[in-house]
Image (cartoon, rainbow, N blue to C red; front, side, top):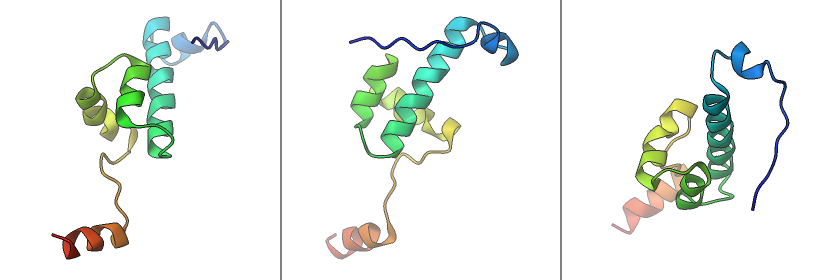
Amino acid sequence: MQMIVNYPEQLPDALQQSPEQFEHEAKMAMAVKLYELKRISSGTAAALVGMERVEFLLSLHHYGVAVIDLTEHDLQSDFDNA
């Protein structure tokens, strides 16, 4: 499927990016946010932006998103079950 997003023509220039760079960053931001909200998997997020899963996971720190987001309870449960 395809989604078309209209944006002001001057926006990429204002961000000092080419239109291609801006569009990639916009797709990446959407994928990262959906991943962070646990709405999609890392594999689906990576496919959304056209990159490998590991590459996507390694780029999350640029957006302030942790690769592994465990609550204290989850972490304790993992330790208890180890």
